[in-house]
Image 1 (spheres, rainbow, N blue to C red):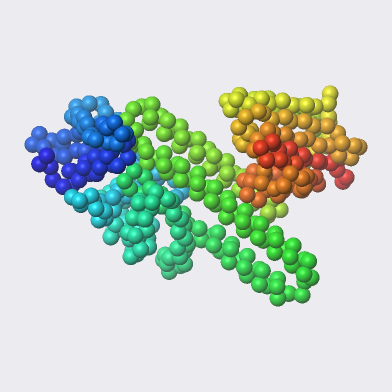
Image 2 (cartoon, rainbow, N blue to C red):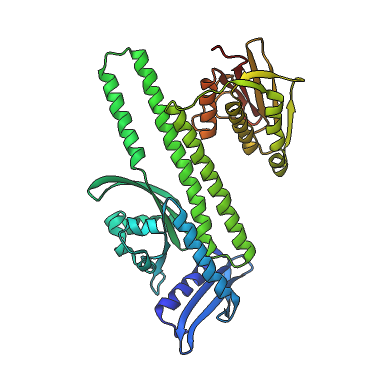
Length: 439
């Protein structure tokens, strides 16, 4: 159509994607004209043959230079940059660069945040449009192009941990690469502290093996360190996954065609940012317990009022998921305990049950066991947990930070957590706590 390559090739790439995928695509482009910048918006619609293959593509283009949509797109770009810069991860979106034969020859940075620009040692205002050769040195050097190409062709996310030198210090960067449209999203975080913790763990194990402690004590400490390391790695994986969803929603903002789509993307961002914030809060709770900074505040607690209020507050969530939520209780139950920590235990178990139950519902019950102990249970009709269906002390490893903290809090209050679970039938968590505490 007489257009230069920098305008024609991205448009042709979108056309090729419609032929390859059979999916409708949108395309924005702009270029200078004699009377100023010209803005065009195109909808590329696949036309299917009788066998379902794409036989042609209908391209509908509109000059949007005088429409309010240009201002909306510009405002969306501003909002996108603000969200990117608020992330604790280094984020960059690179689009593929292809030649006239649709062969992949390079990658070009489209958008990034300040942390990404700092990581690759480039001013952020000069980042858009940079080719891969300008940032490969800060990534995986000569392996960078092959790594990105593999993800683009396979569609499978990859995660790479690399040790680098920054300002004379050793630093570990964990970087995930995810396919997005005809490009890739890079998201990286400084995991030096996690690596140092792993190295400390190995050092502690070596020292312990060289000591004269008994084999039994050594094995107990080894298991504790291993669980802690697995817990930290699992939690960091969950955080990376949550950040990945945020990145995906952010990168899709520039493809949103309507206010409704943009609002959906923003809702997804807000929801996952809240989840990440909750996870970080729970990590702080875990850190306080590990540091011995938690204290018990024992007073008289009306369990009917405390847990009953939690159940009532969760009814709206149960309703949204189409689940029933019931509770069974004695006329009254008053115990000596820490109301804040009992509430945290009950809330974690209740929300976890509602989260993983797809149909049916959840029952919460509480009662006195004897003169010294009382108990409450949370029973769901969910898919069940991974261990055999026998009652045992709950091992929260792999089941999320929430259950890990529940177990820690139960032990801190002098109680115990047990579980009875059967695949496809449900899970019953039981918490047993003292009714009184001696001075």
